[in-house]
Each structure stands twice: as C-alpha cells, then as structure tokens.
Image 1 (cartoon, rainbow, N blue to C red):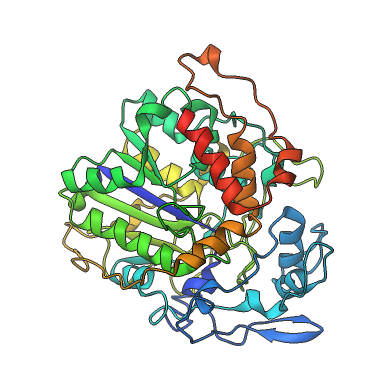
Image 2: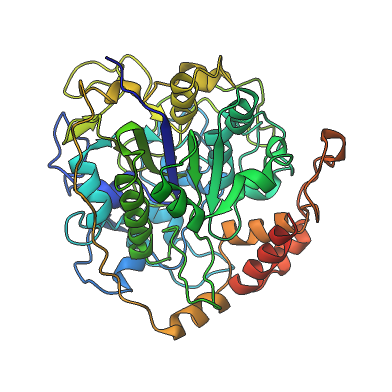
Amino acid sequence: MPADIQHVVVLMLENRSFDSMLGRLYPPSGAFNGLTLNETNYYGLTYGVWNDPNMTPAAFSIPDPDPYELFEDMNEQLFGNRDRRDRRANMAGFAQNYGAPQPSSGYRDPGAVMHYFDPVRQIPSISNLATAFGVCDDWYASAPCQTWPNRFFAHTGTALGYVDNHTFPMPFDAPSIFRRLEDNRKDWRVYFHDMPQSILLRDVWLYAPSHYRFFGQFLADAHAGVLPSYSFIEPRYFANLFINHHPNDQHPPHNVLYGEQLIVQVYNAVRSSRCWKNTLLVITYDEHGGLYDHVPPPPATPPDANVNTKYKFAFDTYGVRVPAVLVSPWIPPGSRIRSPGYPVGDGPRTGRPFDHTSIIKTVREVFSLGGQLTARDNVAPSLTPALSLAAPNNDGPASLASTLDKPDPGVFESLGQAVPNAMQAMLASAAAALPTTAPATEAQIPNAVTPDARRYATIATAQAAATACTKAFLGL
C-alpha cells in the first residue's frame, strides 16, 4: 500500500556541498557518487580534497572566511571562468575563485574550499540518519545561485529571473506552496529562530501571525502530537548575544556542530512524537556556498519564461549538489535514493534528479493539492517512491545524542562583531522594508520594492544585522 504520510517536515540548512558533508559517507561506487580522494583543483598549485581530523572549533568552521557565492562566482567555480556560454562545467574553479586576490579581502587559502568532514567522527548526527534511513546523492540546488533564489525555488518553484540576493524585490510575488496549502485547507507552519527568510513571500503575509512560530513551538507541537501537514524549519542565522545562542545554520564559517545539534533536536522531537509513523522528514541545504563538489550539475527544465537579462541565464541548469537526507519509518535502512530516471547503480540516466522543487512536488502529491506551481516542479521527481516499505517499521534510533559543549561567551562577542555574511546583511536590509503590522487584506500588501542597497552596504556587524531583523519581525 502507499505510505500513509500525514506530516512533511523540511529542515533547510545553509551553504554546504554534498562532497563537503557526506562525500565520504560510503565508499564511492555506482551506488554512491562520493569522493575518491583523487579530486583536485589547480590554482598555481594542485589542491586536493582533504580533511582536518581535529575536533576543534576551528576545524568545524572550515572554510573561514566565507566563500564567494554571487552568480559570477559560481560560474567561475563550475566552469573555471565567469563566462558560462558554450562550456561544460568541469568543477575546476573552486580553489581559484576562493584564493584569487580581491580588493575587499586578505589572503585566503585556495584549498580551504576543498575540505570535507569525516561523516562518522565529525558530523555523526546527519550521517547516522543518512545510514539509518536514506541519503540522496543526486539532489541539486535548483539553480547555480545564492541563498534567496534557491530558497524561493523550494517555496515557489522559481526565482522569477533573479540570481543574486541583493537584486530581489520584496515581497516576492510568485505563488507559493504555503498558499496552495492554505487554499486547500491544509495546515502549515514555518518554525524559525530569528528572522525567517520565507517571510519575504507576498502570499504568506496575510497568514504570518497565525502560521509563523519560533522553533520552540515546533518542539512543543511534536511533543503534543499536533504537527501540521507541512512544517518548514528555518535555522538560526545570527548569533544571539543575549541568550548565548550560536548560529546553527552551518553557513561557513559557522561551526557545523550547532547545525548538528539542531538536527538532533528536530529528529528527536519527530521520533518521539505520536506523529512519527506518518511523517517524512527532509534535511537538506539551500546551496553549496562555494564549497567544492565534483559532480557537474545537469541541464534543468526552466521554470517559466523569466530569463536573467544581465547574464542571459534561463535557469536551464541546476546548481551544485547539496546534502539531502530522508527520514521516515517507511524508508528502508541504508537506502541510497535517486529518482527513477537516475537509478542507483550503473544504468543509464534518462530522467531528472532531485532538486528543491521535489519538495513542492511531494507536498502536492501527498496532500492532493492540484497541479504545478511552475514547469520545474511539474517535472521534478517526487520523494514518495523512497517510502517503499510495506509498513512503517523502520523506527531507526530511538534518539540521537548531542554532546556539544556550551561555548565560551567570548565566541558570541566575536561572532557579533564580525562582518555579516551576504545572507545576514540582506535579511537585515529586507527587514527594514517589512510593514510594521501584518496586512489584513490583499489590498494592504504594499507593492514590491528592492531592498535599499545603501542600507545593505552600511550594516557593519552581524549583531547590527540581527538587531535590525529582530525589531522588524517583532512588528509582524
């Protein structure tokens, strides 16, 4: 019988490639496209993939500083050049893009972006779930772009032609899966820690007060067995100096152990809930964030007619591979999950891989929400074939342990005084454009505006960005 899924939970973390997190989860083979340890980039010297075996905050924060991730940077990473025309991605430009001198930065070790974590020793939480349930080694970011385009793809199936965070209008006008759920009387919630990026969607503004909740409410809802049909979880993007909370989004150079801790919290809450037998949990990442992956992104179906005029990019290529782990008692343990057209093994690849619009496709299927949002989610493979057990009898680990030490308060001070990363700065810039109260009617929703680039440029510290977000969101 088909799996009885009544709850879909998505945790989307930040800016890590598949190779950097799970490339050594299994030995490379036809059944698992992982690292052989022979992968290299050349930039004056040959830089191979490598692991820092130390269990230190510095090792867990590689690379530091944050890699570049504008559209032009990603072209250089994928093609070895910023011009993508008539060229096949060779994945040869990561070290070059990171290490090349730029006016705004000092020396950067080109090899830092070639680093990978030891899945068993260093990031056991996501790795344990990947082996206890299933891992997707052919899940790609929806476009070779920054965070906002890819998160909007996850919610709407399109970026409407925009490729870099700072170019997006707000509110973002594309119809979302949240509104489709609302229109079909299916309950949904976004659970967040500080500033939810998804609040920039126009069609959620009427529902934000009743559907957006802090992460603690997710834990309470799971405990009470009242999870909504669809839960989307956003990590903590900022350090909180008042309650000594570290960012847990895993965005470089944030310590990945705090993201591991978040994964533990989410899994333990779902696993102990009476909703467990009817739940699919998806753990994935928005984009690769400039970190090396050896697999060239394949061609993709454009979501719509929107073409980025500056770069003449039609969104006809996926972004870089990102980690994706599927957790459910309906999934056989040790599953290596690919779409039907991307079979496990050495068979020919005739279909499309997973990307973030597979989330939309799956939610539409599971809750009978009707047809496509865009042409991209129309052709996206669903995740439901992975739910292949005859009954929900793979309960996996009863719980995951977290042994993360409480960090020194000085860590928070340094994080707060650091220059904000692109995601943090743009969230603060966008927060300034949020209305002070939630609109009560469609007519009260303001026209879209592009966040003020001058404000973006004047946000000097991560703490200033966090403060701007907190003040703005409390207004909603």
